[in-house]
Image (tube, rainbow, N blue to C red; front, side, top):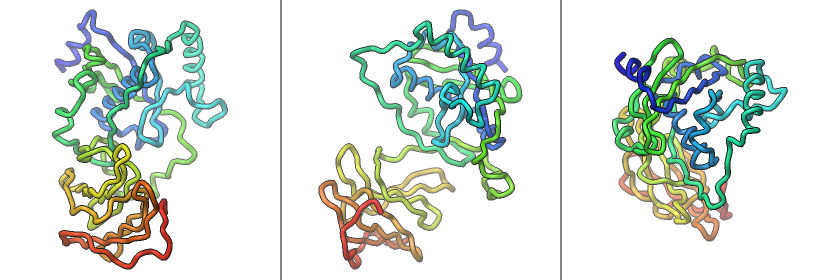
Length: 301
């Protein structure tokens, strides 16, 4: 493609080489966009959080693996004796130790880590049309192309400077804890593995979540200390989030249980005390209703 020809002839443009080790064939079926985006996220984390110097990161070919949290990690982190500590990984770790003696990682005393923008990853064929417009221009996937089976080239921005990524997929040892293919649902086998979906309206943690009529319901939680009443629903069919009726009580660290088409927000914490009250939202209702409270206030249930 034109992109491949341009990147091959891009003299003077920084180039980074990355190998991604997959432990299962499902992992290896990840889409090209998702793979390149994960590598870009890893590079961003190394610079902004781990405080690596970007220029020195370009000096070696990095070998990464996909962790259970759907993020990439350096294979140097694999412990000796682990089933995934293959000869290929051991050779890479030896090379990394030699390079570490040249002080690749330099700490800045006054540096303040900047959090990477959170992303949600799941099984889906599509990526939101909003994804490109929401990317950080200083860390952006501009274009990508497959050059051969398991090999990709991408044009990105790293701290605002244009660079070329060369990403190669390799198969490693199978994880002993991975689920056998024969036992996985057929719907999982047919998808393109991990891709990015739209962001929620606001970042939050300690939410209550549940499946209400085929939609992912995300209720309450905390936003930098504020206890939320907000409720959002994600539809896999349309790949969109929508606002739902506010809860009567702001709460976090609570259980959301769906029973007979009704979502129950049970207990939790309002930021200062544990709660005993319970409220319910029916599928087509426009507001939450209070029901009998718990005998004892509780959270994290």
